[in-house]
Image (tube, rainbow, N blue to C red; front, top):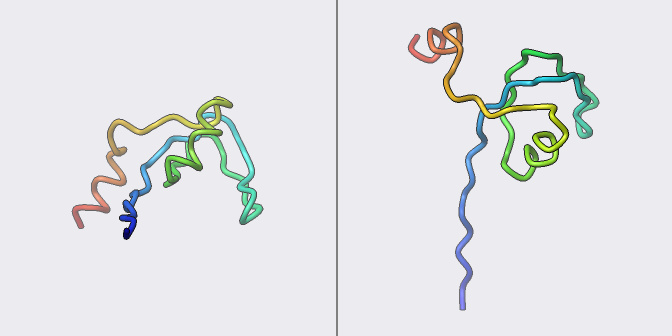
Length: 66
């Protein structure tokens, strides 16, 4: 029987405390907006490093509409 794979879209999160991405060795600073998959975000949410964005900042809204 074939298994169906669900596609999970990344969500935007706001960085609350600086952390280093383990794959790219890039540091994200407080206030940065990052797109993470739920499995990536779970550990960072538990550690208090990120929070889910409820709405986009006005600068990103303007870029999206342009």
